[in-house]
Image (cartoon, rainbow, N blue to C red; front, side, top):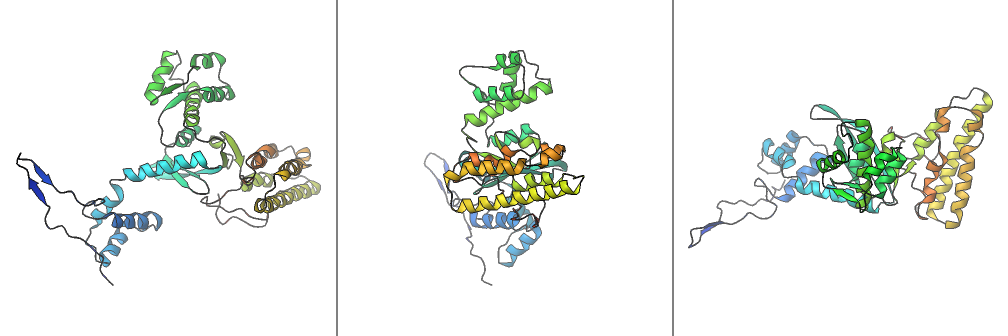
Length: 360
């Protein structure tokens, strides 16, 4: 095997000026701990995407002629990551500005020897992951700020407070014209305290903080008409929300028919759901704006026919036609918003008989 190319710096050029100042020539751009940027790219790619452990990574590099220790490999993987963090924040910001829809989900994860939660946010062209100790709606909204730390009280924040049923007296104290922008959480809490709001009352502080973060999200132009597709978890039900097809149809699976007739109706309805899904797939290949109204009327009929009248299950009442057909409200070329797409780790079956290879 041909040894890897390397450059050795035996001496560091330096000069002494007449004023007595020592000038040392800098190393080439990208050199870190004696290794170039390409080697670091290879280490990061193999470790994160290829899941290669540091001992194996060290052995691979030694095998191709790179004299490097395990400690040096760890330094390449864990230090000086600010440019990558900035790039990740920029990707999330660009995605939330331009994506017609995003899919979101979370899962448990261990972090620093503690139980934590990793939230995935992705679209057709990007995917980001954030790990925190909470999976609340407040945390999810904080992630949607895409790196911004400010709080904003504007019309969007007031609408959020109204939707959450906050008292009008509290809303009157917080309403400002022009909108108030606070650089961080401390400045925001100081403002709340100055308005006579008990910042130790968690039940009151939670919707107020959510409203201010949502105001910041809209202040930065994020999530304009973007549809948020989720599994119907409470923390994800913000903005323009829709259910993915798998989780929408799963609510019908939870129904427990009491008679053979009811069982046949549930089976028929589930079959109609996937027939409607196939029709949308055909429409997406050759979109026609004139058919959107027909799709909405057909979908409303399919989702509301017979089953809700026969079964008083709470699962059935949760099957929202508006959320399933949220795609119809979107742009004419994006009627398929309710369908989970890559990089989400599930696939959409084309018939009820097909199963997902991995549970979402």
